[in-house]
Length: 411
Image (cartoon, rainbow, N blue to C red; front, top):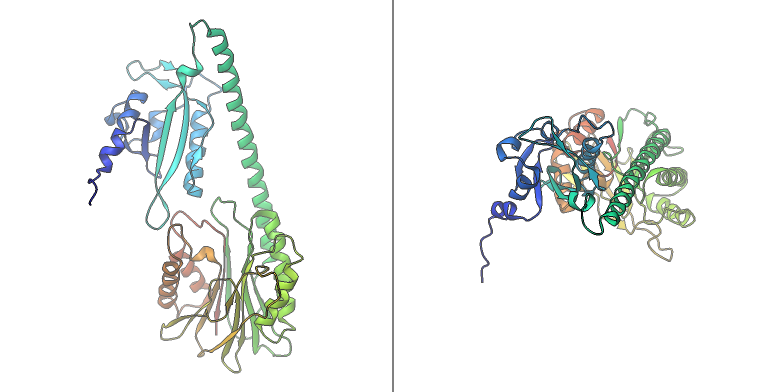
């Protein structure tokens, strides 16, 4: 039996709570009837206008910070794609009938993203509940108690706001230090004979989950530039701890690759080492040994997205025939698989971490298809221009939600 046809425009306007939809430029796109009622404004006074032109801070209150707090919350929602519940705010409102007359108002706001099909933030949903009557309760027999409650509630809300701001500042400082550490441990690749390579690292936009991705390129000993090991990996976690674990795993794999007889053995050694590194469990990594003499790629993956090989004709093949669980995922030591495939001179090999292809509410195959199309389209570009083109095609307009490492190697 078919259900009723739902008109979501009617639902929006019938919501009992005060709700407004804002564009990414913080311009009113729509408001419901409850929002008009609580704000004392008409639709004509709101729609198409900038939020803070309509509702600026009270110029008569030197301590007014409602506008700054609200803008910071909305910007966090745009940066992270996550809902943000604000502490209780004092945000005075000018009387629409008497310019220059301001009314003391208290609000409990919640801001949430409205996502586009590609997972980016398309609109901002701003819901407010007015609590002015609760805060300013007077005149009853318990009026003195209400004033005590008012002072306590408002003070605690302001303290919470200040604590949150200090935590955000501390996180921003840690993120900056971690990014500098990450940059120091991920230097530009050395020349690989006459072969050209490009590497990129892009941190997530304003998000916590940064500094766990890494890459490595190393000439194999005794090959006179005829063989090279390339790898990318991703550590679970973020910040300084993830950057530290990343550095340990990158160094360990780089050393193991120089003495192992193939990428599978190198990953086995790395897996054993990872058991003794706090924070290394469930890290993912893929390693590819490139032999230019035999024109072969030998590869092995520990739970990582498959490298992409693009031939000169634009055919893209995913190297996915030797994938095993992430590091430390098995309680016992088991030999890892590896596979081999040939390549033609002039082909392109791309290794990357999942931030490049994964999107919220999207199947991973969609991201892999997007990568394949972009790689085929730009395959004739030199590695540096190709790396930039892949990032331009695959990074969503709102920025990365996870950090991303990328290697592009012309074979």
